[in-house]
Image 1 (cartoon, rainbow, N blue to C red):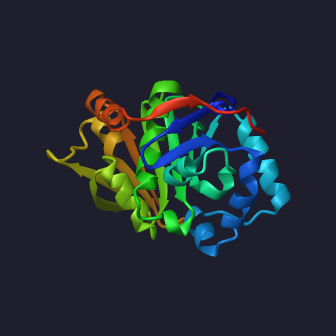
Image 2: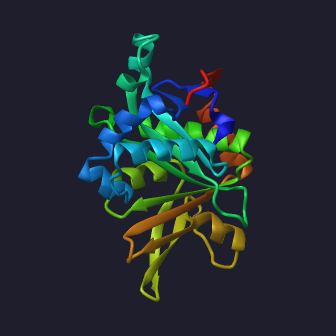
Length: 235
């Protein structure tokens, strides 16, 4: 996406920068990991294919991608290559033609030494805030492998609520149980807010969240420390 090609977002733990050609070699090394391929349902690419993918994502209007940097390393090494500070990436896909206010969010903390430090949580919050304030998004969707418990727990902390399950036609449809108790199926808004589909074929959990005004205010409060600064125009 061209919109964010000159944008960097500075948080407490992470810095988000556009995905440029400079980042591709490290990203390519990450994606050789069978664990990451499994967790992200990805196929290994050649380095040339990875460069082509980066160029495509830069141009596509329906994909917003930031590379996640370790803020401490980035601040300690001003002017140094960002590749040494890379921790992962965070993405928004705006692929629902019927609903331009819906964004699918993905977060990957690929660097093993950066996991378990809250990098993914802050990156997700920062990306959601960017989506709400800059892209006009009001709903988010996250698709997570059933075995990726850390990611599932992370999104639950981001108000993707506890769930209960009912089965239908070989798939599981899960309805969220919020602080006020179980949602009722009689309210279509609550239904959309809390519906979670679990596919037994793809072993994938899909969580959805709509940004009500209280949720929006909570999100903006959680990201009030984030600074937006210009980023050099990368390739």
